[in-house]
Amino acid sequence: MDLGLKDRVAIVGGSSRGMGRAIALAFAQEGANVAISARTEADLRRTEIELARIGSQQHVLAIPADLSVARDIRRVVRDTFNRFGQISILVTHMGYGPPGRPSEFNDETIMSALEENFLSSVRFAREVIPYMKQQRWGRIINLLPALPSGSSGSRNSTNNIALSTTNQMALVGYSKMLANELAPFNITVNNLVSGPVETDYLTSALEAEAKESGKPIEELMKDAVSGIPMKRLGKPEEVGDLATFLASERASFLTGASVVLDGGMRQIAN
Image 1 (spheres, rainbow, N blue to C red):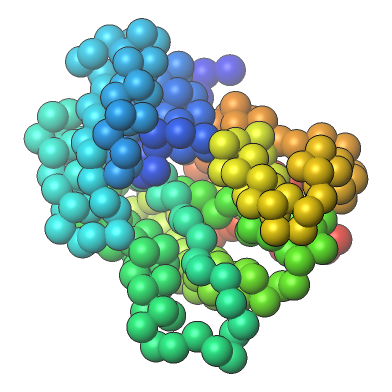
Image 2 (cartoon, one colour; image 1 turned 180 degrees about the horizontal axis):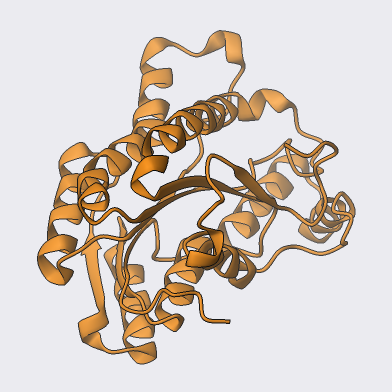
């Protein structure tokens, strides 16, 4: 299936590892030019090499940056446009807020979590929108990963995900309003909500939980999988495949939506 992404230009945030990396690779396989960005330069360079093998070095741009910082976001967008002459697709990658009880967060902690997650996605979108409006075509995709402990079959208190949930709900609401604003310009805005996926982050989270609870990591993994109707974890490549579809011409009438990829975990569809 031709997704119409050849020679499009995609910026993928948080793309040095895991789902972000898989999305960047999926775009490269469709013939898109890809700008990748993350904090850890060593991991970023490894992903850059993988992308160059799919296309060529001319089709990939790696930009080390802290995407919670507004000036770094502006630099990533500016450097991408200067290199490729257009920006067609933006994929933002929301992280997690610190654990804690909702009633006990101080203002500083709340604002820091919003800055690093919700506002990062808002700022990124704001920077690319003028380019997309000018060409009257664009795709903005916000990757909202599975929430940490307590949200995917874990026994931990949901207090651990209060700020993560707050950030995600804020972005879902903002994305819907932004989608309505940008629809006349042929720009779509959607959220890709993933369930538990085989990534280093999931493994490290389970290892930390195993250390804290004293339970074997194998038992915790089994428990996590048992809460998924398909009885397996998702694969990063499956996230990449869905992202490329959302960015394609085939999804041109899909906007303002939160598309869930979780093996059937959610009880009620959005």
